[in-house]
Image (tube, chains in turn cyan, purple, red, brown):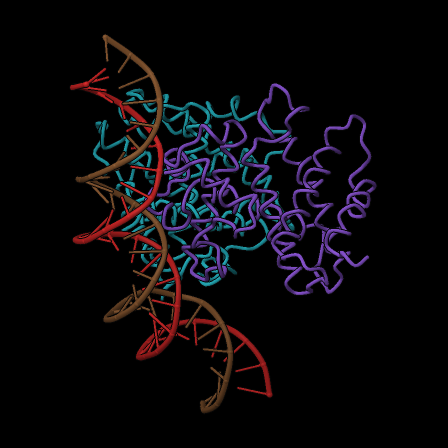
Length: 215
Length: 215
DNA sequence: CACTATCTGTTGACTAAGCGACAAATGTCG
DNA sequence: CGACATTTGTCGCTTAGTCAACAGATAGTG
């Protein structure tokens, strides 16, 4: 086991997200989708009252009524589960708001930024009794997961419509995703901040040059 | 197939409830409990907007994300599923109210009567837009299921503490369960009726002589 | 009447989930 | 430090769930 290294290796670096086998290709088997849904739901419920760090795979699977071996058949570790859970809720949030990914990159970017802002506020509301929610709105692994999801979505978009610059898609996606999250986090911690709809364009204008270097 | 006959055969008659294989012995396998829970939950949700009669097994399993063949591995037909669902919710209601089955028959009877009254009002609240809820509070198969559950509980109690009379336990249980349901139904349809707590003792006093013929 | 369509139970082959046990890593406390 | 407990991945075997296909039943339609 190498807890922090697994993250620092796979995460901020340009390497692919560390979600080895699972969730690739939206499995058709109802048993698979059911198991993953149950695990993700259970983790979300547990996170209302517990720190992610203090949870063991044992506890998660016990609460879910799923065998521990089954867990490892779907996720390499609990961090991967967290990432997939965040991804699922993020996509659901976007879909609930009618954000569609047509050809327009700027619309997609705006949707993602808005999604991050709303996801943050929503996660903050239902978070556990944090002693200092202003200073650290979300636990670190949660933040990593959100950024990974945003990075993945940006990467997909970049590969469809490659920009002109010399930088690798991975570098662009990582830089932009961290920028978006950092901006949204700053916004969230600002007292009496604007609404997400009013604020999102600011981040969008800041980040757009990263993705469109020619501008 | 014999839709109505299967009911009229197995239900009001003293024969055992028609729940062939399933739910006998509270299966330990997590997969089994999960499947049954999902099917029962799904049926409850469907019943909020649909008539039980109009539902096919196909529809139920589709909505539940469970294979149709799996359904038949647990329940002989949709009526058995309904009965098991009602039984589960009824037991949950009793347990939620702290009704405990100690040695006292009168306490148990009171708990059951109260449970039926509350179950009826609760089922009525969440029922579909019935054109005439006063005349017919619940669809017929729902009524059958509730009575079957009550009958089963009474039968269990009677077998533990057999009364003195010459009647079979089945006859006593059937008569009493129908009496309880009929009384509760009448109470529910009475305008400005008493609370269930105030009313339950009345049924209890009417029914007790059936179960204790010596009194 | 035949034609079409849907629902009902049931079967057998295949696949995922459950279970117990294992070695190895990681804490934790005296 | 050593003894102990817990967690982590992993593996083979068993069991439950999925799937496609089947024949029979029921009902609606031209």
